[in-house]
Length: 480
Image (tube, rainbow, N blue to C red; front, side, top):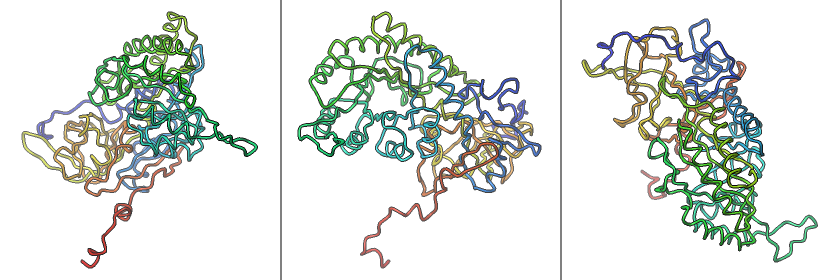
């Protein structure tokens, strides 16, 4: 619908703020559209972490990722404290850093006592650089390179083994890895057992996008349940690896709780089987997948509710199978950081197509947020410099890339917009920067961390020089 045809939409941008009757500590961040610290100041501007978004863009430019430290820390604490409350055994929350892996984010989650789930050598290297203990690092992935496995073995992190090829490659690497003797003597035959977990495919369906459904039988991830007896038998004969646990992950952006209850029964059944093979199983990792609120109609369970179901389901399954409680691991990613960040854009021109729609263009798009074009993801936005202005138009927010599908939001309820307005898209902390690209040779945005009125750059804005840094021009072309 074009803006000239749209009837007035009820409300203002202020409707997206969290309720004022509770405190940030009691709100589940994954149920909020804006960060927990979001307010509107006396200038009618959106503030996050005590920082005026208009001032942030003036100082750091746009597009700009704005990460609220309080919201991220609150989510970490809610997961950590809920497991302590509901699970009678030991637990460890791991941040699924593929959602957003950078030095600052790794440092924040580690300071809250969380471990980190990494899925590449680059993510592992980043976490190691901020001093995360290898005992709290878990390497995932369905096709880890030999170099990545070597780095993982040398660093001492736990490796989540995905398939036969990887298992056999890892055993060969681990067999050649010596123990460093404190006295400086390394016996030629000594070995350092490498901690591993096995990823299994439990065959559990959940209602989410096909691309982010990972627990069904038809998945590229993990050993099928029909392979596990053979895998257990093989591992029981290896002295260079120590299988300490089992892992499964059924998908992402999940609003249902029942699949996690089903997952517990499957995992504990195979935990019991692994123990029969003499494997030193101590840990169960039930993955993550809790969804967040991207639109008003989204209604995900709270962090507390999710942890309660997972904890009680594992406890009941262990009692039923008569096995001791394992150390329980979980891997939230999106629900930790998704709602903690927003992206600020500057509005450019408009295109009115009478009777069809109005396009409002911004200075970013699919290179800083590829989720709409990849997953058909839906977002909400506000005009940050006029938060209380009435929502009078329904427009399409278009990105600047040379691609017809570069649409940030197809139907966005906004006030009448003008060039240089600041448009803030909410809940962009997960899979925005981490999936960003240089499509059209557009430089990736800066990111700032805000807290108590202070803003710090955590990712520098790329320059044109950065874009050509890895380019190489053959000598025969240099005279052109």
